[in-house]
Amino acid sequence: MTISYSLEVANVRFYGFSRLLFRWKGSIYRLLYKEFLVFCGVYVFFSIFYRFLLTPKQQDLFERVALYCDQFTNSNFIPVLFVLGFYVTQAFNRWWGQYTSFPLPDNLMMVVSGNVHGADERGRLLRRTLMRYANLSSVLILRSISTRVRKRFPTLEHVVEAGFMTTHELKNFESLHSDFNKYWMPLTWFSNLASRAREEGRVRDDIALRLLMDELNKYRTKCSLLFHYDWISIPLVYTQVVTIAVYSYFAFCVIGRQFLNPEKDLNFALQVGELIINPFGEDDDDFETNQLIDRNLQVSMLAVDDMYQNLAPIVKDKHWNQRHFSIPYTLSTAAESQRPAFKACKLKEFLKQDSYETEKDTRLN
Image (cartoon, rainbow, N blue to C red; front, side, top):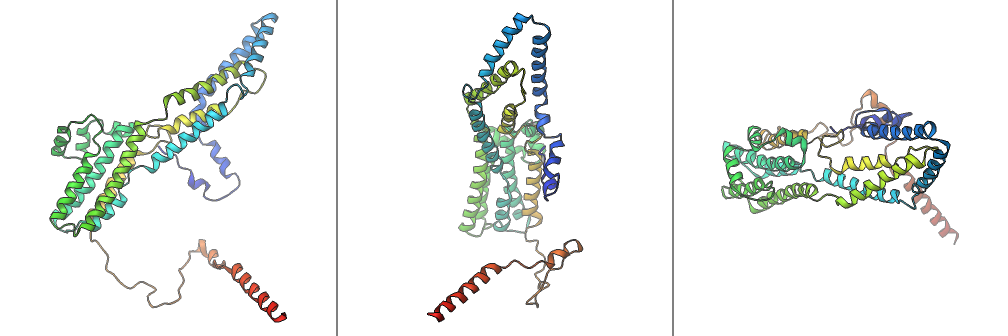
């Protein structure tokens, strides 16, 4: 699940960010404790082996090997900082791109609700079906990239059982052979159904139909981006180079830093990079894809069905007859009302003073 801590740092306070260091779920400690224990165990093993099991002559040879290995921990031999920094930067940019590419139906459902008309059963059926097709497309793409969604909908029959697809639509879906992901098929159904709604007069004009198609294409673009993020990964050769560089660095540290502090943060960065390359798994900080599916379907159906033309009576607002009015404060926020309102006071004073000085100079001249 996605770990959120924004509320804990909403206000600047003493010991604010430091409190986050003691959280376990989603923490760097939970991610790395196994690797850290292995490193410490290997380091202690070589330390004991060197001090208690080797003869003085063998200890001298071990020290020579340790000094030789210590040379490779120099960044001039293994440019691990540069390689790892670039890798983590690319992984984070990829993570953020996948988040911003998640298809949300909000814009599309607003356009459907405002441009597919009809309070009768046919109008309601058109609006709900259009949004069901849009949500079905996102479910299909998420089934192919998210392990959580795949476990929730292991087969297309589960998708039908959940109500995203009918049995007849499933037959049409399976009858079209393609070697590639067919997440785009429901969006094609959406396009055809919107055209039919235009022919029936449910969509008033071509401008409204064009607006529907524009929003549909934006939604399809995000689905396509998720597909391509899953298809095209960070080149494997670069991931291998980073992994070899980091683990070889620590392998040399096990021997070469026997008398020094071996704790560095490089492996931490590697593990973080591995965590955020694909946020559609089941790690602590991966995306809550199943909850997003539930949310998207619920709000889209509410927008195009229950809320269609469901407007409260238009009445004069509370401040209709008041030219100057103030909004009340609660007791906990009353102190804010005593603060001076935001105005460009300093700028006005500066302009006023500058005008006075200019006038004064003119009089003197």
